[in-house]
Length: 283
Image 1 (cartoon, rainbow, N blue to C red):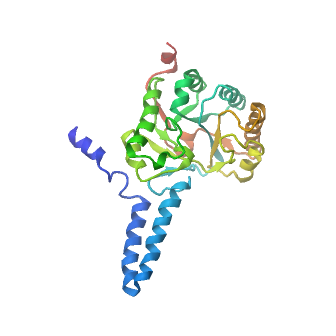
Image 2: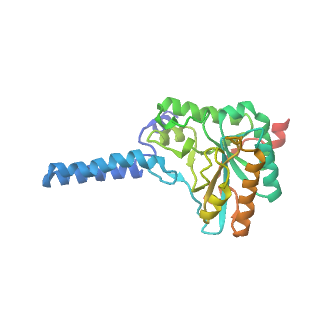
């Protein structure tokens, strides 16, 4: 057991084969070789690597510091639906009814603060047969700039809360899709892997709902993971308009002969693990 703990606490676990480390060594070697020609040339590969370290983690589809699941692996006309930041009593129940109507399943990446506020909605999501993932406790947009301990607390709190509902999430979606070099070890400690997305309507957390369906349907491709939000619309946008946009996405995908399947099926990896049945939760 002691040896296991030592392995789990090693800062090199899950990072030794990352693209960030490989490119770092390449940049260093290139800089050394370039210095023999002209010392100023050594700046180019090193500066390029530093710029990449700042920009790559902000791109949701890039596996830079750790493996990131942002697309499926089926090579078929399948896509997956995911909803972030909820649940929300003004939108989530209506969304669940709509998903039932279209007979599709989605993954809800929920926040800890909303789990505590609306536990009945977590139960409703599970009772309808959908999956749940970890989206941090507070959805701090600058979470990846915080300390390792803060990052671990934010992620661990959601794991603990959801265990009370008889599930253990296996998938974590970072706020705004950003990653950092601390994340691989923290996720490993909590038994999680990283899931992002490849298609979104740039809705700003339901601040810009109008035309959301058109944006998504214009660029959707097979194996895409679609990012949406099940939070109350902002900027005086009605819930009914938001629901119409989501319905337009569902019908539009069907017209394009793109079938919505579970995220776990799309990436061939379970999103959560049940520790007890729904009936046991109800009792």
